[in-house]
Amino acid sequence: MGLLIRDDRQMKALTGLSQAQCDSLLPVFTDLYQAARQQTYDNGVASGTRRRQPGGGSKGKLPTMAEKLPFVLSYYKTYPPGDVLGQQCEMARSKANAHLHTLAPMLYATLVHFALMP
Image 1 (cartoon, rainbow, N blue to C red):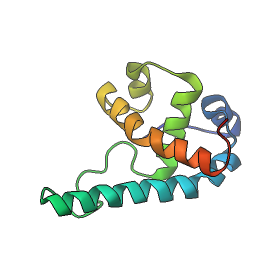
Image 2 (cartoon, rainbow, N blue to C red; image 1 turned 90 degrees about the vertical axis):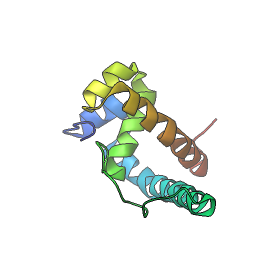
Image 3 (cartoon, one colour; image 1 turned 60 degrees about the horizontal axis):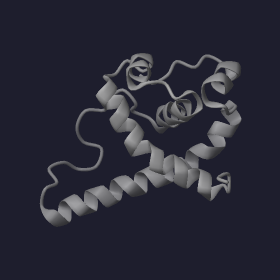
């Protein structure tokens, strides 16, 4: 389900970016995420431990990239505890933490790509 963001003002309050800025980051963030998933898939096939095709299994609470990006941006804007972040997105704190550890490297690489990191 992700964060419920109603308008641009709320988007800026939660993520620090406008919707247009977030939309400009999304293609690179998506490409990096897909490349990481493909790498994980290839490693699983090579080791013989992979059981599903990419995209198989349950979809989870953040099914789209448009929900994943604001999720990780809002964490770095407000630094809520895992319990609070999980509650906002209707997921367990362990899942919220797992999503953060998965998405944070992609966000970092996206910001490096746009030369936005100090």
